[in-house]
Image 1 (cartoon, rainbow, N blue to C red):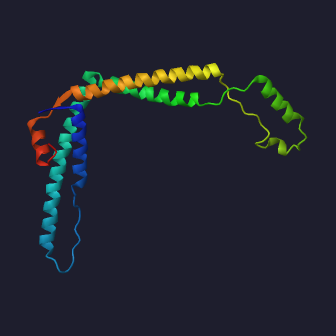
Image 2: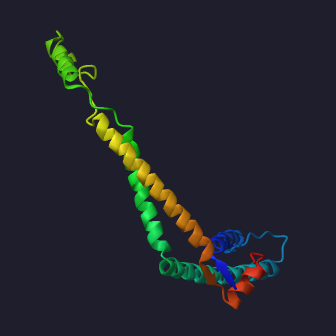
Image 3: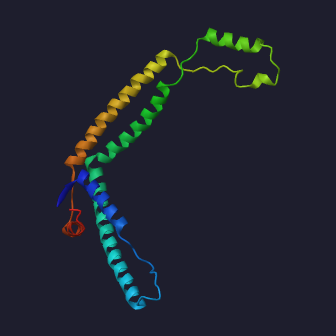
Length: 189
């Protein structure tokens, strides 16, 4: 059976959910009113069935992940995902640069610093937070360049996301009959 990568991802999520719900019994709570042998045998039997089912689902998950990994590489999807991750980092940095404070005019900065220097404050209060001048370091032109670069990165990211979506729909993997049977048993297919 062939499934596209998008469906394979959904199947993997369903397998994980099913595996979480399989109770792997490791002990049993007994009381004086129960038949110990029956309770122990019952718990042991349920644990064995659930462990076997968990193993089957784990094997199918492994087969799907291996197939998806190979398909990602052969289709170029891995490269696209790597490029998307790089663009995410660049978008994060340039978003920060675009919102950075702008560089103050040199004369204004010099005037503020002279005013601080000439003010009559004690040495102790001279080091408070009010006695400092803060200025951005980027000019308006630099910030505008950052804005343009950010827009270009965002456009590139949208293009790559479109390519990723297309590949997730067009690239397929093959589930063998054993995997298909296990998935049908658990109502996943």
